[in-house]
Every structure is written in C-alpha cells, then in structure tokens.
Image (tube, rainbow, N blue to C red; front, side, top):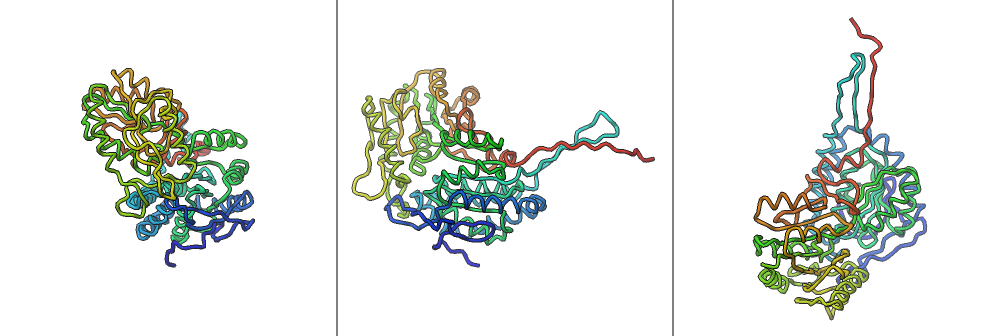
Length: 486
C-alpha cells in the first residue's frame, strides 16, 4: 500500500479508518494564507470511549510481545517516515506555517525517536536483590502501565507526537492519541504509516476533534492509566485535577519562560547567533525559546549591535518559499497574544529597535521579528511566555543579580547562558532552577537526553532511557523456595 497525504482524513480506531459518530467535521487552515488545508472528524467522548476499549483489548497481547518484536514495528515506522519525508514536511508546513526546512528536520527527528525507542525497548532491565533469607529470591521487574493517553501540541506536530508514540509502544503500552486541533492532519499521516508498518488492530488509536470532550473522557475513563501531555501549565493543572479521580499517572511537559544570559566574557558573535537560532525557530513558538535575554552591562551595546544586524536580515514569509526563515504564527489567537505583549511593553517604556508590529498586507498571521529594549520585570513579556518572534533584552551587573532574576518565575524548563569561564559554568548551571540548561548552546534537545522541567514546568521526563520510566510500573517479586534440593 502506497502512502498518500491526500484526503479523506479520518480517525483511526481498532485498525479501522472512521468518521466521528456525529459525522461532524472541522476545518484546518493554513496560517500563512488562511486557506483550508482539509477537513477532519470532530470526534467526541463516544469516539474516545471506542478508542480506549480497543486499546484495552489489544494491551495484553501487545505488552507480552517480545521487546525485539515491538522494536521491529518501530523500525519500520522510522523507515517509512524517511521514505515519505517530503510529503510529511509539506503537510507540517501547511498546518503549522513553519519553514519547510524546519519541517524536514522535524520529520528526521521523529524518525530518530522511533529508531531510538526501537532499541530502547530491549533495555527495560530488572534487578536481582540479595535476600537475607537463603530460601528467598528477590526480583524487581518493570511492566507496561497499560493504556496510554497521549495529548500533543501543534508547534511540533510530528516530532512530539512521534516521540510519545514511540516511547509508549516500546514500553509495551497501547495508546489513544489526540493531536492538536490546529495540526491534526500531520497526526493522521503518521497513523497511515503506523498502519502501513503493520501494527495490530487496537494497539495505536487516533481521535481528533473536541479537546474538552475527548480530554474529559481520557480522564474520567479508568481504562487510561497514564496521560502523556505537552502543552501549557494551565491545562496541565487541569489534567492533574482530573487525573486524581482514578490516580492516573501523569507525564507532563508544560510551559517555560527561558532566560538567556550573556556574561561579560562571552563570545558575543556566538551568543547573538544563538539567540536568533533559538528565538526565531518556528517563529518563536517553542517552549524552549529564549523569552528573557539578560546581557552584562559591559557588553550590552556591542551585543545589541550584533543582534540587531542579524534580526534585520531575517526573511518573513510563507513556509513553502525557499527564502523564508520566519513563518506565521499558528493562528489568530497566537498573533493577538504577541501583539498584546509587545503593546504592553511599549506602553510601559520599552523601545522596539526592530519590528514591533504585525506584518501588513498578508492574509496570514505574520508578526515582524522584533527586538525590545528598556524592558523590566513589570512588563507581561518578562513574566509570561510570549510564543512569538520577539526578543526582550535587558542588562545586569553581577552573577548574583542575574541568577535571582532568572529564577524569579514559577517556570523551570529551559535556560541558557554564555561564558568562557569554566568555574562560572559550574556555578551557574547548578544555581539555575531549570530542568535543561545550555552552556554556550541554545539548541540543546537531544534524543538520548532527558527533557523536562522543574517547578510548574512539568512532571517526569521524555527522551533517553528516562522517557521509558513514565510508561512502566516497577514490580517487586519474592519467591520462597519450598525445597532446598540435595
């Protein structure tokens, strides 16, 4: 069966492509043009119940399948992702707006996740513990939690979904996944590849549609044993409340408010390029984006000059155009939030050195790449995640001062700093209250490393062998021998 990215777009439940019970659909629009990309089923609680039942029925056989066999399925998916890279990348760009080059990188990352967890499935090790009794043997094993409910965002619609799917399947869980309403077709295309890889019916189920109804059923139905979610802290808190009804396990990667610190001894060219690579990737719509840039007062003027020159060169446009480096915001709500943050900052004394307003003359949701200076902590942009192409820059005078400012937030996901001082690298990396810290590096995500946050930025970790822990239970088994033999 050949792969196609064309309609019809349906949900996938128990190995069957299906419309919603209600027969209702919703439109998915291209944020660069506002044109309709396709229509997708408006699934609800009843569709979700069917998917959960299918996953439950498939769990016993899938979880007992040898890890090597589960890994072979994931390897097939990896191969299919790479074989269909162009078609998948185009759909990611059509739905999310990101430049095609970034979309291609996302497909490759998704494939790497499937390859990693295909191998990681065979490394779910147990332990043998010495007993105090000669007749006893103590063994610790790890087993799949059960049905995993996966809820994913729109900013990396293939990679984040693929990482969760690969991890849960490798651990022996069956899944019900719900992709974001802005980018569901990318999820549907991934499921076409899962089907093509030959996964047994019920092992991987996909529902699209009403986030409230689907989310409520995933929480209320005791079949789902773990919720894997990437998204805002506000929604994560609601999931925590709902999960308490059945004491469901939660794996949450939530909001961030990343500081980016440039010390006086930093390589300023490297630091300025790193800000641009980080902040304007995916139009600033990443939980790992630098949201607050702190520059030592001794190098502030030189750094601003370098940063301004780089940002002024950025090309804004439709992600399908080769020259585009910065695409649109994903939807009108995203554009409104960026406008509000910038307008608030300007009204409180900030200055826009570059940009500062939406891009005129386009039907899409474009905002100019922007640098704001003279910012302070009373501005919304210095307290909240903007999720847009705006860099607020301020100064500091001492290491102690900037650490206090960087840690003065309820978030603790990503942090970055630039310095040539080895001792400072140790001090600052240990003092920053963040789950992921980059030293002289602003693109730090790695498949083999743990991704997750401190404080209100999440629970648990994704990536590496740590990611498997969220989908595995630890079981202690003791065996007393009734006969010692001869």
